[in-house]
Each structure stands twice: as C-alpha cells, then as structure tokens.
Length: 147
Image 1 (cartoon, rainbow, N blue to C red):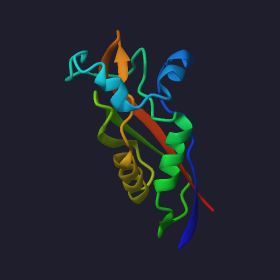
Image 2: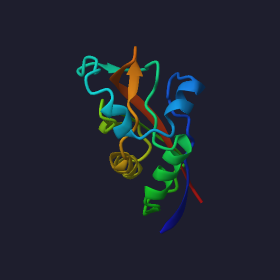
Image 3: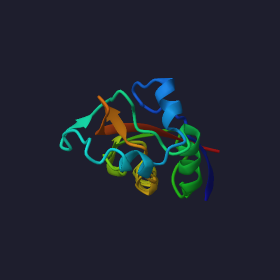
Image 4: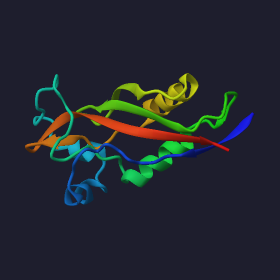
C-alpha cells in the first residue's frame, strides 16, 4: 500500500463574501441562525450560485479543512496520482449538505472518497440573500498528492 499525503487546498469557491459577514457568523451555530429565521425562506426550489452572505462552516474554513483531512481514508491500492477532485454540493436552508457530485474527476476511488467525506460534513450556517435564508451551490477542491 502506498502512503498518501493529502493536501487540502482550500480554494473554496465561496464565490464572493465580505470579511465582515464571515466574522459575524463564524461563532454562530446553525441552529442559532435558523431559530430566528424559520419564516424567512426564499424560494426553496432555487439554488443560488452566490449570495450576499455565503454559507459558513461552524468554526470557519480552517475547521472545514481539518474535518475533511481527519475523515479522509488514506490507504489506497492505486497508481500514484497527483491532482484535484473538485466537488460541488448544495448547502440547504437548514445548513445540511445535499446532492454532492464530482465536477472534475481524478480517479474513481479518490472521487468516491471525496464524496464520502462531503456526505459526512455537519450542518453549515446557511447562506442569506436580502436577509433571507437561501440554498447555495458550494464548490470545494480536494487535492491528493501521493508520496
């Protein structure tokens, strides 16, 4: 078996958000945000590609990286591959991860592992548009480098 060094480059396509908005919600919990805003939901059938306030992982981006890194299985019987699996998923109005998919494949085993870990993600603090909670596409690259 080959040992894998997994590098997670967080070039999150958290397409556009302000630092102030990020700082304001980093310490909030998903339940806190939803308890005050259950009646603020915009069209639940629409999925935005960006919002005024993008979804936040509890604890911030560093905690998201740690979560992914700690949950990836690192033993594979495959050829050494260096590259990225780019995945996208929806952060729903309750902060849950929905419909994960690979939009740029690397290797089917690594693709499957990236999707498996994304399905394990805890709830995010949901996105807001015009003060209302909305569903948003979230894109994340997971970079694999074999040693």
